[in-house]
Length: 337
Image (tube, rainbow, N blue to C red; front, side, top):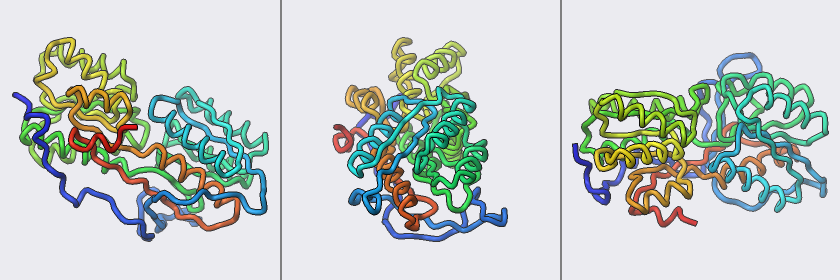
């Protein structure tokens, strides 16, 4: 199956777009009230705003624990550093090296050192209860960023993006570029994490809508080298694949390398998520058709602002949504730095 020319791109339905900055209050799966029952949450879309500073000139110390610092998450970390400096706050950032036990130890060390607030990007979104309990026991404000815990207690806000929308946006565009037909391969991130689960679900839902068959669905753990290995295995299997729907840009770039090395890149359309610098370079070179912008700067800024508001004793929404945006060759210049 030949790919549609790269610049024959149609506009996505506005029904998939997130817009507006108002506050809403709706039930949301996974949000738990003090009684242990599902609770309604307040949700607000992120919009750039003035830096939030600590009240009374207090010197606020923030501990931030990341699961790892890949290209995208390093951008989030840089944004956290910049926003904290602008607010006059001190921030310490650590990487858990993708190990739950290391992240828990980091949280304990931050608490013992007397931080005023915690920002956590969880390694495993299904096992955040221990982190939440430790922060609550120490009466330290906790903000989860980028990866939404499967259970989110009231009073513990989440700053991030709706990963289901990312998968839907990506696959809708890939489907259009392939005339809504052909076989689909999904490259998953870490299946223990909400982002991988939801982006994969979005891919699957859109593929099913167009009766496109998902013939491959395996995890590449967000890594370029693993995306390369998965795509090489796929090519060697002889299975026909027309669309690569990767959960992030790193795995998409690995798949591009594999298909390019095999002389088969013109047989597939490839998409990713994050709109990293490397991904945009690949798009400019005509190798990557689709990516979805995840606002690393917005997530970092909103994470710090929310943490400082909580230290100040101010009310914050339960969910601060940082909307995704579709990136194609037509609009990619808006996302290049």
